[in-house]
Image (cartoon, rainbow, N blue to C red; front, side, top):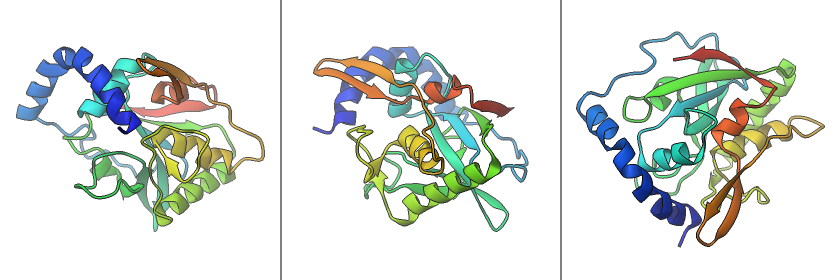
Length: 209
């Protein structure tokens, strides 16, 4: 059984009651979280976080106490238009979970996001540019979602893994990000959570909504 499926089974029962009212409310009255916000000032390498509405999102939220966000992507500017490149399971309608590239507005659709924030690193812009290019290469090479959450492999990536590796490959020295230990029935695993980025000294918020 895929590791992320096992994690979902373990944690989803514990959190479903906590979120059932929230899910019921949003299923009746979904609202856009960006309200036609102007994203044209975004730059390559900006990180966009969202608080999702799916069961997978709630698993992350229940496990990560350092932020209000369950998912993250990286901004890539193409022809002056900002796109989000990110790794996410279950959004390819039964097909392989390839790395996605989509407009910011699509990343923040009401059925996908209830909150969002955008952070920027304090690295030189050429580093941020190269990280965005690296992420775009992951997309072009059709890498898929890492359902084993294994940081030691590069052929598959989960959302935060995509971010850290895009930046690490853009920098000559490593960007150190803390991991979070998940205690599950069949052992412990080390995962980079969105909150591990939020708490990092090199990231600073530019938009919270």
